[in-house]
Length: 124
Image 1 (tube, rainbow, N blue to C red):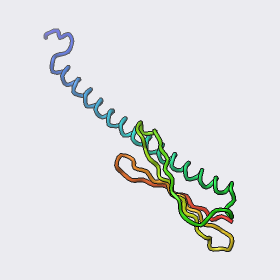
Image 2 (cartoon, rainbow, N blue to C red):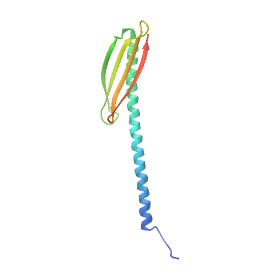
Image 3 (tube, rainbow, N blue to C red):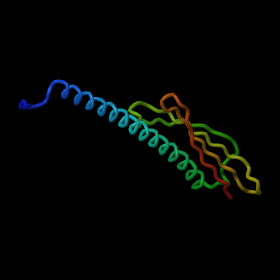
């Protein structure tokens, strides 16, 4: 029997190959988590923009709200670059006298994909 000390070149190369595969897999996982986090952050901002508009209209009194539609633009730097949110508010006469149907839709483009969130409320 020969006395073997240390590892051979083949074992080192196989070990480095396995380590490389693990690192590449972890990189893909981390990138996926970052994209998901960014998408959730943008959806959260859009929801807050919609809710802010509803609260603004509620505070001013829905009876003073004019029937019609309006659009405004908001910018966010959540993606490391600028993301434009387009908030559209539609106020219509409600199904019951002296009520308003309010719908706020916020849309944006995230990595080339158009996304939107909306909230709707029937106000006295």
